[in-house]
Length: 217
Ligand SMILES: [Zn+2]
Image (tube, rainbow, N blue to C red):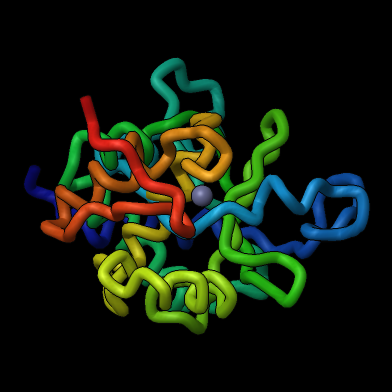
């Protein structure tokens, strides 16, 4: 393609920037009544490129797209520089693996919010409500507890750079498919995170908080 992909991706995200700290019911993310368990899982991600291009070329208000693709809306408290790093991570993961491309092309709109003391890095999905919590101050978007958990498995820790952010983001995107992590008898690391890691030439993650990740068949 002749266009500059980075410019397009940034436009896609930043022009959509929305600002608001609560959902339509006035609930603040992580507030009482929400199943905290659902967004306390881990730390990583994936993504997609082709649909970001499509998104830019089409009417951005048209949500009816049979092919689908993730759109991103940033909470007002999610810093601009972190927004840029996030979109770069999405672009990186979606352009380096098939799984990444697939995950970035999931349908729906994801609200991106910062982690806080009650809400660690994680993904949350209930119906059309999809939220992604990332720590904008961490070089791999990890909350401090997740980073501590990884200390027992230093070779699995996402690197403190763009690749690490892509790992985190695409792990979480995996949860938007309904995948659960290995500690909940799921295969999110095997099926989503590790394929993206390979595309980035990073080692596979071999465990999820000590629960072994089965090798692909
Ligand atoms: Zn997880």
